[in-house]
Image 1 (cartoon, rainbow, N blue to C red):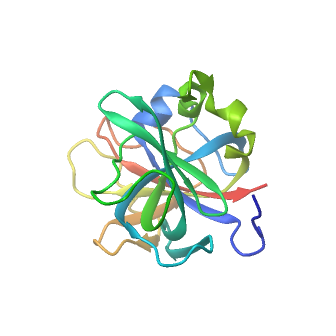
Image 2: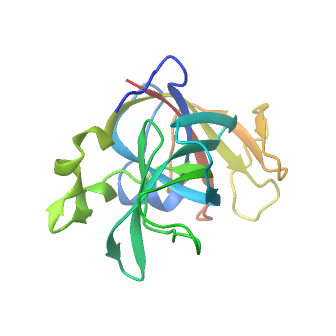
Length: 198
């Protein structure tokens, strides 16, 4: 696998409150090791066989690469996408007409899912042993929280300036660390972890 980290080494990764409640909270400057998880929003056959990756928005990417179906996880197969970096999904299916091993062009979001890759297998072998390059080291450079002002019981963060507004109008504010149990007064919310690939 060849990947020029100078081309893109800062990634915006979506992270839900529930993921942090399951694992742990994070502060700016923290480091961790994890594979990349994706949620695709558009996948189509690619005319190109040159692997590529570009950032379209703070947490939206477009890549060209090979897509592979490996063992199933429940009702869904595990997909591995190789666009110069590796990412996997357990929530996606190949569209009709696209076969495992095909080159695809895909738009996708990256999602924090630390630890999930530990359970992935291919032909009864741990995937991270077959593809050790799929696990990357990360350093958190910035943390954004989605604020839904006016929700009953939610911490408003009203004194913080807006750091990012999504195309759907969702407002994110910059914080120094997550506090998943208390940031939202019990309501589920989203964070965007701005992570540097080390």
